Image 1 (tube, helix red, strand yellow):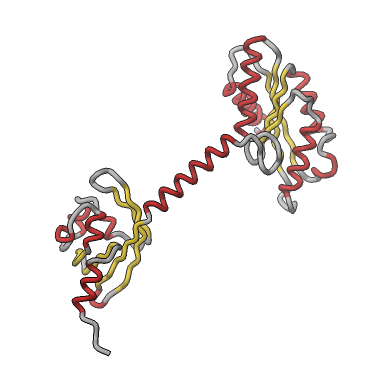
Image 2: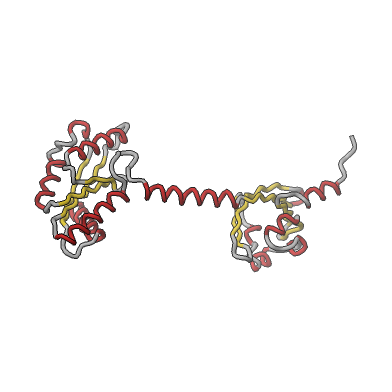
Length: 263
């Protein structure tokens, strides 16, 4: 079998659909047209480019460490992402192969944004079955608007529910306990999950004294928790709507009460 023509191999690299670059010492010894076009320059302009000049041209990332993925901002302001494969060559040279993964990055970002939008649209917390954080905050906002208009009493309870560190299948117990809390409420009351450990109860037509009594019933007497909450830590804070309050102010008072209790 005859030896392949080196000129054909060089031609194949120069016309490859992926970016190819040869670094020798502190400079770019050669680059193919696919890479040059992607960088909005020419192969001739890249050839002989050293680190300092590359830094001035915004291409210093080509000389960076062993990172397998690089990001370059192009002259038109767009940003490209590449996966880079490095291959050591004799005499201290290296061949770099660049695969454009910009679209994959864009799809990942689109997916992240869609997931965030779904969180906002979803009215139920998947783990507990209660109202989601966004839904319970909207419910509180609606009740504050009603109290502001008619002057009706309104209270809120912030509930912190922490499992024992050693308990297995915590998510199962959490759902059971959460539903037991819900069963203790009136039909007009609403409960939702603020975050991992905190829940919010919205109590329309309820003065602070009655909210504190309910908190005592749910937490200290453990009527709703029963034996399934063995070892769980439960704390409550209460706040009542005041004239001039909005959602942020009422939640802030609940948080300040938590801080004061913890201290």
